[in-house]
Length: 109
Image 1: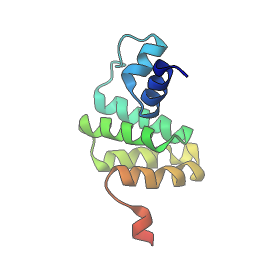
Image 2: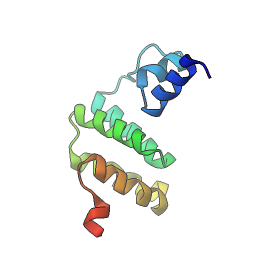
Image 3: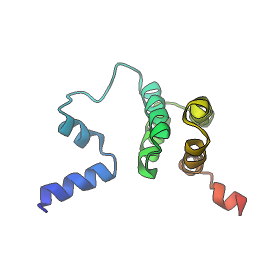
């Protein structure tokens, strides 16, 4: 594996948006939505896809940077629950909680 391929895999692993956009051939990372709405929408898609932990952290950090509150982030989980189902919600909830600074496993244990 070349150093460039290794770097690309590292970038993708940490959800480097700029690297992803370069590969996809996109010039602008923004959709026309404000940062908060875009990040919350991305979070909903990640929940639906049962994404990895780093993806959730990235979307939540971006949402918070855009002004989203904890309640709005949790509201995304509640809103998509009837569509994505219990398994996705149960998988996403502890990850979202950790990203918001609350350790569900510790609270339950």
